[in-house]
Image 1: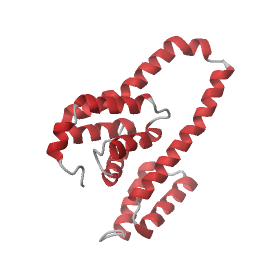
Image 2 (image 1 turned 120 degrees about the horizontal axis):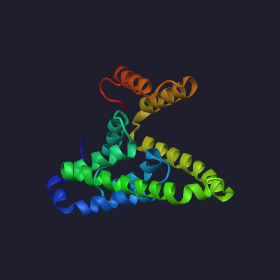
Image 3 (image 1 turned 135 degrees about the vertical axis):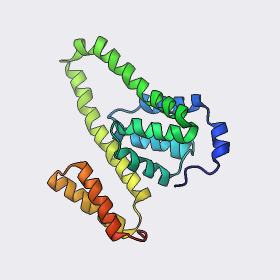
Length: 191
């Protein structure tokens, strides 16, 4: 897996503060959980900072899907560790989670009791829900364009998607089936 072009040079240039601020920005301006954060994380770490490439980002997502916990948090930790080891992982985790913790505490203490039944509050949340679905779909499509190689990959993705939607099978079963089918279909390399 190619992570970065020049590891030694990148480690010298990527300060813990830069990593923290980048993931603080991701955590501050993204609603809807890990999947909604994916396009923002990708834009920051792949497109803007060029810390990792698209293929490595896809590999990180595959790894973090199999880990317990939040996708965005696990991804931030993995990327932080790639950049600066354990300290980078901890700083990235703090950056991505701090805004949520602060916002939830403020909301729970100050706003929730006062605005729970407010029609405008309900209307805002009604509008945010479709936006979250749109962000997740956009992340899935963009990620698919970067990591699905050839007709076999597209067919396997479509097959697994339809199976998951129709049967409602657990995501772990879907991932295991995808790995097994990938092994069968693409023993050499999917092209």
